[in-house]
Each structure stands twice: as C-alpha cells, then as structure tokens.
Image (cartoon, rainbow, N blue to C red; front, top):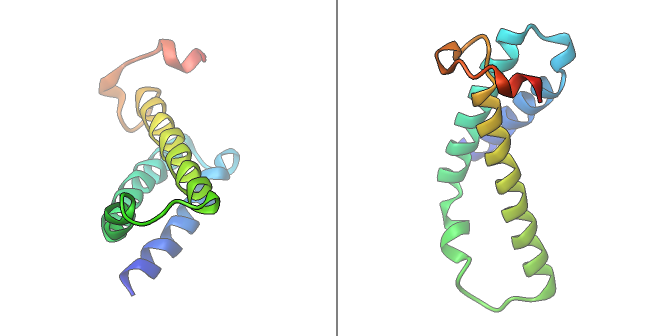
Length: 102
C-alpha cells in the first residue's frame, strides 16, 4: 500500500512540476524538493530491485531496462543538482547567480 501511495504522489508531483509556467517560483521549488524526497522514499521502498541487479541472466530486454533505469537516475541526479544550485527562492543561501543565466 505504501508503494502505491508513493507512486501516485510521484505522479502528482511530477505533473505539478511540469506545469512550472502556472506556478509561482516558490511553489515550483517546494514541489521540486518534495519530488527529491519522494524519489528517495521510492528507491528505499523498492530496494529489492537493486539487490536483484547482480542476480540472474541478462537478456536483451533486461539490459535495456537496466540501462534506461541508470540513464533516468543519472538525468534525475543532474536535474536535482542544477535545480538546487539555481534555487532563488527557497534556498537563497547558496547564492549562485551564474547558474541562473544558463
């Protein structure tokens, strides 16, 4: 039940995050931080997936799924890093103005 709730919340938060044009900057950043927390909880709840990676045979389908998961995670981590560094409202103490021009 916990996994379903977290997955539904992830969907809602992602849809809200993609509607950035309709949100004030503060709300966009708060939802982004919530999304980072939800993804962390999602990964903890699905830790058995990571334990199963070294086991079993790797078919072409399994390899594609693993590579797409790794790619998605890498892009998510980069997005989180740049999002946190370019925060202007919620995390102003970072004060990195040069990234906002990118």
